[in-house]
Amino acid sequence: MKPHFRKDIISSNWVIVSDERALRPNDYEYKIRCPFCPGREGKTPPEILSLPHKNKWLIRVVPNKYPAVEYEIEKKNTGEGIYRKEYLKGMHEVVVETPRHNDKIYQIKHYDKVLEIFALRMKKLYEKEDIEYVMIFRNYGIKAGASLKHPHSQIIALPILPLRVKDELEHFTDYLRKYNRCVLCDVIKNELETKKRVIDVSHNFIAFTPFASRFNFEVMIAPLKHNPDYYLEENFSELRDLISEIFRKLHRTIFNPSYNLVIHTSPKNAVDFHWHIEILPKLAMPAGFEWGSGFFINSISPEKACEMLKKEKRIKIH
Amino acid sequence: MKPHFRKDIISSNWVIVSDERALRPNDYEYKIRCPFCPGREGKTPPEILSLPHKNKWLIRVVPNKYPAVEYEIEKKNTGEGIYRKEYLKGMHEVVVETPRHNDKIYQIKHYDKVLEIFALRMKKLYEKEDIEYVMIFRNYGIKAGASLKHPHSQIIALPILPLRVKDELEHFTDYLRKYNRCVLCDVIKNELETKKRVIDVSHNFIAFTPFASRFNFEVMIAPLKHNPDYYLEENFSELRDLISEIFRKLHRTIFNPSYNLVIHTSPKNAVDFHWHIEILPKLAMPAGFEWGSGFFINSISPEKACEMLKKEKRIKIH
Image (cartoon, rainbow over all chains, first blue to last red; front, side, top):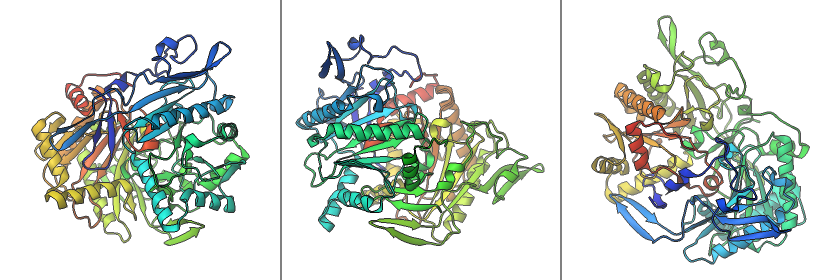
């Protein structure tokens, strides 16, 4: 069965059904030879781009071998009784961030180049027909759903605006109409005034624990100056420094935390947006309450999390 | 800090901040003496009710010792710059389902009584002032966020309609206005016609893999006849038989699957609803894509999942 989109009829959920994804390797549960390590380049589809370094490579971008979405399909909308299946175009790429299998994100010195390649690919994918949203994310650790240990991120270009992004976009738009200001600009101003949740501020960026953090030690990083599009960003070495510092603090405070990192950038043709990075540590597993209700219980207040990260005091929680 | 509600300003997320939850015991990660086993009744707050059996107990309902919400608080709404904190009344209970520490759900012969006690407590809690929604859920296994192994479920009575329930309610209401029929009644009709996703049907209930399943082997159980409120249900021994059969199949097909079971019942004063049970196995962990986008990749089509469950053929997936 080709990957396709299904919309639920009882909820607003969108689901991608992709049987091929079940075949993807997992080196947390089974011992495998890492397909991203140097010397095994043939294990991935041919490179989209790579950053060379002393006759070798430093960063590679390749198509995902087990894609959730595909571009070379025929668009169609088929019915099945009261349901709809949509075959839509999308793209799914992998960024292998370093040749070094065991590096943590803050140990990758050239992460500024990784961040720049994210911007480059994002811009390119937004130029494609049928692509409405480009999502970049990094899964680290088994609790965060990572299936391969080798440092990598994923880029998914989608033909539909995802629910969560649509929701954020609506809030940005409503706030702009009501106050004629950007909601995230106001959040940043508020955080800089109260200082209760600010972990670090650099010349162009802020890192803070959001007021309504869903997860323990959740962190948001955003540019101080209004900028809707991540791919228009220019200060990648400064951004790398801040990201590295935040992850150094997370790793000092929590033992080897699983996490997801997600870049939220403006959808195509949005009225307003302000790009930001969400870092979502997965210490406790979301449970029936979260899945059933769609709202979250956070057992460490963002103010306390901020204080603990600043002090870098090792904690033991569950 | 007393448990309280925070509404995000950039998204529609609600978060409960409850520092006390961080203190709760976890016997997956640390060896502890089970607080739910017979002889350790003093480890829980005093019983709300219990079902006696031969001078002992068969089922106990107790307040959650580490509640996410509390009823005995002063309602207030406090500001913090552009944010709001809401101190609202709620209740959080635990149902210890059996004295036997290691029983799987399908091994609990008196599960009809457990289901009946759910209905009893649900009805009671709906009678309380300020309670808008009563959610009942069961977490099993570490991937599903369970912290204690002893068979138990949780009941949370909430002062706010959770996002996911609100979303379902809107779909029920819209469908009713448009077609003058219940959307889940139509889904059930469709499933019975096509048979592609029906695992089992009894006199009063159906179990099927939903068309837009978010998770591998997701199962929905619903009454065949329209009924908004779970607590008005009467056929608990028939429901127990079907639930047991589904979990026997899940355990035969997948090795010891982690899962969440959630009962969706009608909110207070809803225009229309049709109660149902969601069984959400957690084989793969939701990752950055799911958390960032709010939509899901399912690597096993519901049609295939249904077929595999019916055949009960043991699989190995990741």
